[in-house]
Length: 324
Image 1 (cartoon, rainbow, N blue to C red):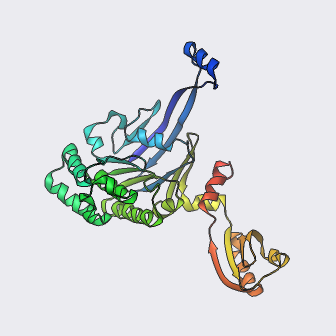
Image 2 (image 1 turned 90 degrees about the vertical axis):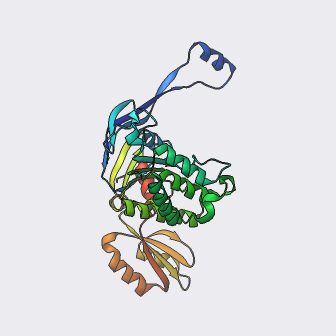
Image 3 (image 1 turned 90 degrees about the horizontal axis):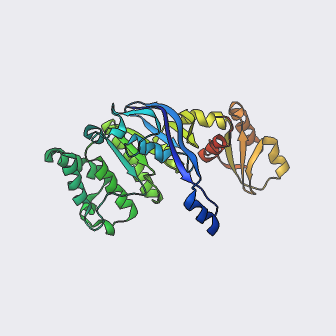
């Protein structure tokens, strides 16, 4: 569904020191430098996949999504989305994709969301019968109810985002580019939107490309991740495989029924975190069974959980140049 080959986007940026004299000199001569926002990345995404497109701030994620949705022309390289070259912006292409950005909106601020829904029906040339069916399905999935008839300015951030998704999906796109769709939302609304995105993908078979700084979004929706940093591809593969390669150990968190001396705790492995009533051990995967048995036999265990290292730590290792 998406094929990218050596995609690049370069910008010429004016740089000057602060102050009056540098400002005056820049009138005659404006020194520029080349910024490689996207630096020769290649990947492919199959129909129906849900893929996390991740990286730190300034990595080039949004720039890539804008090129793949036709908003930007690349400096070099090739891309095809649903069989189309995105930056040609053909009508058939625009009818097969959607781009939802958590910090932008298409809803008409002083009008109910249903007015935007009707406007999009006209823009995309959706037959009224298809529009009614799609709208009814999305209203049910998103639990919009009476929200669609409330002026947008009176809706909460989470309610507006649900209406944004409804407006973006009325034409039943085959490819969803979602750029930080849960940014700024509370925990319950984030969970609701994740459930909707998963349900929509499973019902429609649409391809989903998601960028998010919330690792819970990635864990809930994506088995595969593409990671870029400074415009370069750093990793493309399974999320579980990345975690195992970067942090192969497990975290064994133990809540103690009484205080244990630190010297006695250290016999059970490296301590990642320790308090009077709780300790977290780092345990190699292959030693997990024996180490858990030793901890249960030797410590006053009130409760125990076994966890993978946090994804934030995995990505921190990756961006720091460690294995992965």
